[in-house]
Length: 211
Image (cartoon, rainbow, N blue to C red; front, side, top):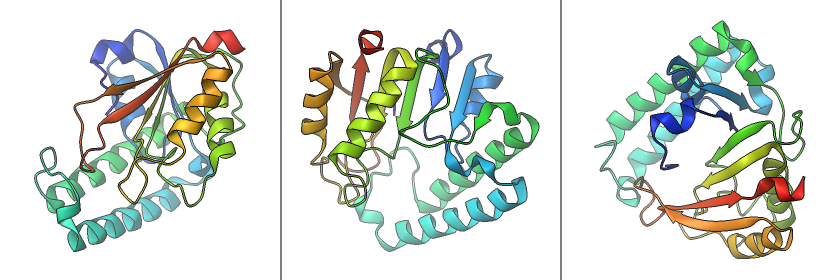
């Protein structure tokens, strides 16, 4: 979903925000990368997270089963396969979370406990622009300014579609604010598609101009 190759995450420091129960930090670190994940729920124990992740996957699978026609199944093939991917991801996350707790930092946007320019690349998946009913324009601007503050090179954000499967109403006004800050903002297509038509990634660069 971020149009990345293995070398893109092994040759530079990466922040995954919010990381959630993703296996990205574990996998990229096994490749030799330097990845930090940040999420407010990293204060919890492994057993508590295990129960929460299992319940979340069950809910997701149930929702997908009710409306399979709303999604593109080229990658996952079907709901059952998608459920297996999700379970494998959170199980690998939990193992790494227990073994390498230093990779997982408990914090939330828009206040991250990192110095400016701490990471070459910052990734943010399935949070910003997804919840138009919960996050307003100013919340998006504050979050992206903070992500840009801790990034030296780029911030990449996916998806730009909200839960109603339409392009978020906040994309254009937020981009205008970021460009007014002196940041370079562009849109790039990616080869990943789960929500129909949602193949657009936001890329923020020239981050050091504002720090």
